[in-house]
Length: 88
Image 1 (tube, rainbow, N blue to C red):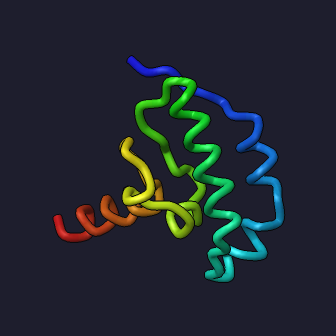
Image 2 (cartoon, rainbow, N blue to C red; image 1 turned 90 degrees about the vertical axis):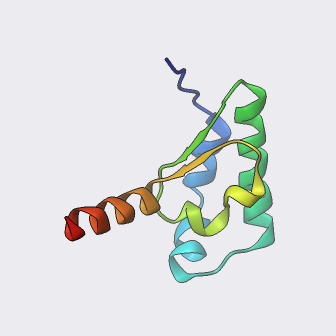
Image 3 (cartoon, one colour; image 1 turned 45 degrees about the vertical axis):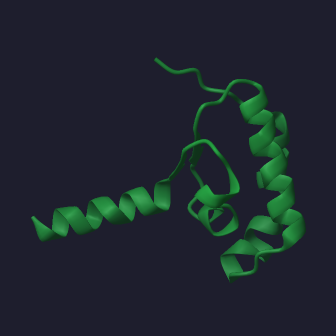
């Protein structure tokens, strides 16, 4: 069983142009990474035991080395499943 947390700060963050102005262009600014890590810390404080990186570009911003809880990067999960399916 799991609980889904919604973080209002996250919603305002993903609406920020940083997603298209930075990550989609391969640019990772320290300020954006720091802001996202603050959001992750807030989710952990609320009880999150894992975080799903549901936007494919977020894996460019943060990784497992940035946190002590599991991260599920949907871009990597989809790529791994596609490779597995192709090789079957």
